[in-house]
Length: 501
Ligand code: NAI
Ligand code: MG
Image 1 (cartoon, rainbow, N blue to C red):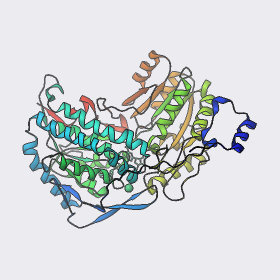
Image 2 (image 1 turned 90 degrees about the vertical axis):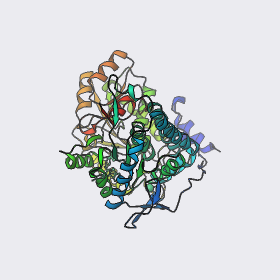
Image 3 (image 1 turned 120 degrees about the horizontal axis):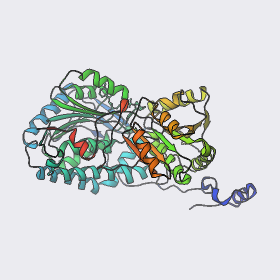
Image 4 (image 1 turned 90 degrees about the horizontal axis):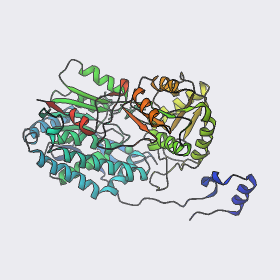
């Protein structure tokens, strides 16, 4: 267990730290606390088409690795154009009955998916952490329960669709094509599948190439839940597979979550077609701290806002805007807090920051951090030890950041915070909105009236007040400007999966 050596105790006494600044990271050695549940991985994952696992037509597979130690976890099928086509044909066939099935029958299927996912929650959490690098405490306490919650919530809607658009009738669109990213692999499956299925659509979905395992494991659950063959088809692969899904003529609607760059490619290629689209793209959210905010809570919110999931979060609070009068105090508290964050083995239950999802992403983060240093911002990183193997990056805070710096404008998608200051509310709004994105924002203040004013003036799809990164299936999520369009979750999310008649 934890030990406090005499030497270290003497050291703290001689420094004479005030009691309020106990730095556990300096004083205590944690024993390893590895999660040991079996993720039940297969050596090879095939495509899930027409209710069965099938080999890809061209026989191509790629490796999925564990970014925490660079070892191979499994082989994943690479779907080609012929496989994607077979998936759409299966979905079109399934739609004939699924689309007409009474809502209360569809609800039973969706409810069973949620229950089965709960039954296998620990196994899915371990698989998610191994494949993607996020800390086990997050996959266990956030990703998997949230994914189940999305299925439960939408199971509840399936027989109440007359209330989605009061006064109007709704009908499913048909087959929808969906492409998802690697930051919340299972949760994004749930966000995409649950509303589509509740509304009576059938789906062809592509997980991200670095994180296909929990998506394909969900295929096992869909089988166990007795979901009719072809209602959901899962085609793993790279960008070529994604493009085939987005451009398939059978797709009545496409839904994409990922980079703004790829979102634009898809929008260009579908312009002028009849396909409906929703896009959930990047972000560069402002987390705004006023001088009357409860500063200790705000510091927790800042940490959660940027270091949750190693900062691989589209709505991450990556730009901290602090009121000038409390800026020094907030920065000092923040640095103290960051010193005790535990970076390392994602499967350890004490880990706060796990592995960066891929070598490519680590490279992107390193490049942008180097740009921050070069442009003159001041870098702060705690002296935590990183594992020798795997992709890791220290929690990083940049102060003295100018609005023109790349680290203040571009999505870094890593554990890197840029700190800026403001004097007045108007300046905070001006700076917060001075971005190409508009996905989320945070406001920390004691005044309710100020919260209401800020949430009206901030051009962001979600504004959190005195909290950050709070999610709920009942609450719509989505962006403005280059963060995309359409909403996921809530009644609004269902509207994007139906036609009004
Ligand atoms: P990406 O946008 O390339 O990947 C997202 C998904 O799109 C993956 O499933 C990928 O296979 C697929 N894809 C790639 N090219 C495609 C195409 N032409 N047509 C259809 N689907 C395609 O994102 P990437 O390269 O993994 O990450 C790059 C940057 O994008 C990150 O550094 C981050 O800033 C941002 N990003 C933002 C996300 C968000 O949730 N807002 C999620 C993932 C990445
Ligand atoms: Mg992987």
